[in-house]
Structures are given as C-alpha cells and as structure tokens.
Length: 229
Image (cartoon, rainbow, N blue to C red):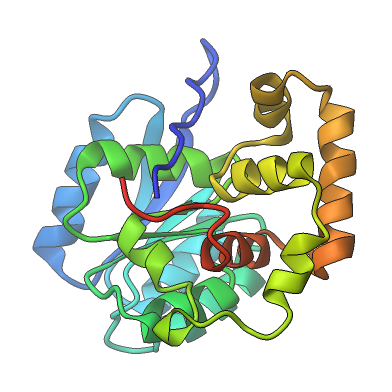
C-alpha cells in the first residue's frame, strides 16, 4: 500500500518531540542517532524497558512514542494501554521486527496509530513519525496486509456496507485510510474541507466505524486501498 508523505513542516514550526523505546541498546542508540540528524524531529528521551518508557512518557509527554513491542518487563499491548493513561496526547508508532497478525491487529486495537516493520528505510521512518504526529495513520505494506481477515475472506456484511457508499465516499475513504488529513483530501478532490468532514461523518454512520484504525482496516480488507507498491 503506497502511503503519502506528510506535508513539510512550516518554517519555524517546532520539531516533533519523540521518545524512542527499544530494549536493544545498539538498536535504540542507532535510532536516536539517526533521528537526531533528521530535520523536524527532536529525540527527547529513550528507554529500554516498559517501566522506563512509562515513566519517561508521563514526565516528557512526547508527541510520538516510537515503540518496540518486545520489552522484557511488560507485554507490548499492555504498554500501549498504559501509555494511553500516562500520556493520553502522545501518539504511538510501533517499530517492530514482528509483522504477524497476532502482533499487528492487537497493537492497532490497543491504540497504535502506525506500525512500521524494522528494516524499513530512514525515509519511511521519518515519514511515519511525521504522519502519526499530524494525527494520520501510517502502516507499512507488510503491517497493512495483516489487517485483512484470515484467508482473505471478508466478514459478513462488509460488501453490503461497501455497496452503500457513493463513489465520492469511496474516494474519501481511500484517502482517509492512506493517512491524508481532511484539508489534504479537500485539495486532492477539489472540494471544501467542510464537505470532506461531511463525507467522513457519512462514512462513520454507514459503516458503523467511528475510529481511524477501524476505517483503515475496512478499507484494506475490502480492497478500497490496494496492497502492494
């Protein structure tokens, strides 16, 4: 699934404050060094355990928590849930070596705003941080594929719900799932932001989905957002 790059930061805009969480010291320090040299990003802290991550997140209130799910002292899903309590305004971007459905889907359900597989390039990482900080979703193709139901079978009713959408609503759904903001969707489709918001409200009502991860999963599994390059 091809994902959009976030819009460039406005001149003079404050950098995105990021907390890096990974239990492997060399990996964590490497991420910190790479991000420290990336324009528009400020690494405000690092942690190698869940306890340290929760303490740092609560104290620093970063805009983005870059989180490895494999921590020694607490399951990654539990960390996600507790982060929502100690730093409710922080958005979590998972960076993991695991891309199995048993990792991706629970992480999204627990509140992750993005999921990137280790081995991705620095450009993808920076783009993901920018997108998540802006309130968008960002999933690598491998992670997005795991949002599909097993064996590629659609849940009962998905095609019926998809059929209720107008062509314009399908366009808006695709762009929402790709991570574009309402303003960017309006520019892409040459309609007002107010009209985009109206379409998004209609999508929520027709599909019974009120959260962004739910819309992304629906769009991917029904083929509105194609997977692949």
